Structure formats: structure tokens, C-alpha cells
Length: 411
Image (cartoon, rainbow, N blue to C red; front, side, top):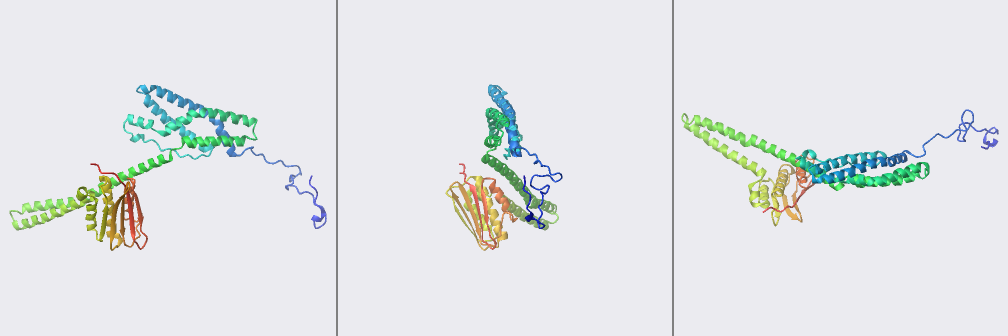
């Protein structure tokens, strides 16, 4: 019972009765006791864990039956034609079971597990190649292992939670949390993709796209150069020779002048074809290697360039070509954009890497997003596991470092 307020608590000296609706447990209208609002015994997270643990039994039974049937039937029939394809289909089905388990753990346990990359079956080629791709899938095998070992755990968690709901309900939140943590560990350990493998697959898929795009861009550039350069000159040459042929008898002097002009067009067309071939893969690179080829590129630069190539042997032709193209593009940027007075090119080998460093004393400010072709070079090197680093503060100098994997040249 609440003690009445003393008269000293009021200015008039009169005692004040309990006020209805105050936190003393009385109601506002009739002074009766108010009951506290109803609330669940456990919070929402505990009920989700309990639901997940109770669902473990039916899902574990289904997964165990699927895994044992797939392994026994598929394994027994491997001596026949349909054995391996059947096992491959079972592994693809196991991937779908793993997807459902990850969704259940995400919804009820709050476990965020990344979905593994889908198998590239559309690019797998023949039916046999696709079946072999599915048979090598580590995600499918880990899912079958997950389903095969879950049955005893599903029985244990179902019985423990069901009994605890009626007997040990004060301890159930702690039991549910402990059992759910084991489930979380199993999902992360067996149903999550391999981080390193998935990262490598994503990198290879991205690099393949870069290689395809780069090759397509190079083909378009070659086609444009041929169409706008040598092809146009050859068309004009044919027209000029045709006119000279018509005037050969009527006006020999004019015909001779036209033939001389056509001879000059032939020389220009040949020079453009040589330049185009040099841009694709120069003959000096094939015959004499990077030292001579880079010296030739440096000689055409508008800025004095010092070239130092310290290689005891030549790398693989593909790596050598990428290194040549990289230096050629960087020196073109030096000529066009840097405003430098001098530049240097250093090429050397360090362990299993080919290192390239291009330095100039220009105005700086170069970046991968600067529109000077740096991004294309970075993508080209990244496609072969290379690195491309630009250090170009405003005001200069600019230093570009490129790394390529070293591969020995085939004899």
C-alpha cells in the first residue's frame, strides 16, 4: 500500500491522495490495478533460431536421402554410360540445395554467405565437357558433404529444442544460441564459396573480357588506319595511273608527270603500311629484341630519351610485345602532353617479373582517368596479371611503373 502524502508536501497543508494513472500501479478511471501489457517470452531473434533448429530435422532428412542416393546410385553406375552424367546432374542439384540452405540461414540465423559463381556451362562446349565441369565443381561436392553429415545433427537439435520448450524453457534461449552458432559455423565452413578461388575466377573472367575488348579495339584501329590511309592512297594511285594510261598517246609529257606523281603516292602508301606494321609488331622487335625496338621508338620521340634495357635473356614474345606497346604509348604521351625536356626508359628483370619504368620531367598531372590512354594500358597489363602504377603530382615529374609476369621465350 502506498503511504499518503504528508501535509507538508502541499502548500495548503492538506494531504494529497494517490493520483490515478501514476506509476503506483493504479488505473486512471476507477483506481483498479492495471496489468502489464503482454509480451513474448523470448525476443524475435531467439524464435528465429528456434524455428531454424526445428526445421533442421526435415531438411536434414531430405538432404541426407538426396546425398546418399546420388552418391550410391551415381557411384554404382559409373561403370556404365549414364553413371558420370547422372552424378554430374546430382552435383548440379546439390548446388540448388545449398542455395536453399544459404537462404534459410540468411533469413533465420542472419548469416550472410556469398553465393558461389555459377558454372559457365553455356561455354562448356560439348556435353562431355559440361559433365566434366560439373564433376570438378567443389561447391557441389561440399554441399553433398554438408547434406550427408547433417542427419545426426538435425535429430539432436530437433529433440533438444522440442524437449526444452516444455521442460527447460528458462534455458532454451541459451541452448538455442549455442546450437545455432554451430549451424552458423557449418554453413560458413561448407556452404560458403572459397574466397581465393572465387576472387581468382572473377579476376580471370574480367581479364578475359578486357582481352577481348582490347583485341576488338585493335582490330578496329587497324581497319580504320588501312581504310583512311593506305587504302585511300592506293585508290588515288589506281585512278591516277588510269588517267595517265589514257593520256599516254595523246599527251606523253602530262602522262609522264602523272606517273611520277603516282610513284610518289606509292612511296607514301608503303611508308604508311610500314608504320602500321610497326604499330602492330615491328620487325626490329622480332629480330633484335626490346633494346633495339625501344631505342627505335625513343628516336622518334620529340623529347630526348635515354633507354636502358638490362635483360640477360628475352622474355616470351607476348610479354615482349606488351612491354614494347606500353613504352611506345607512354613515350607518345610524353611527346604530346607532358611538355618535358627529357625522359628515360628503364627495363629490367626482378625474379619472375619484368619491370618497366618511364620517367619524364614534364608538368605532371597524369592519371588513369586523365583521358591519355593510361586506363587502356592499365587494363591491358591487368589482363596478363601485370601492374600499372602512375606517380604524377601536379608540376611533375611523372614516373610510370609497369610490371609484367616473366615467361621464358620458347626455343
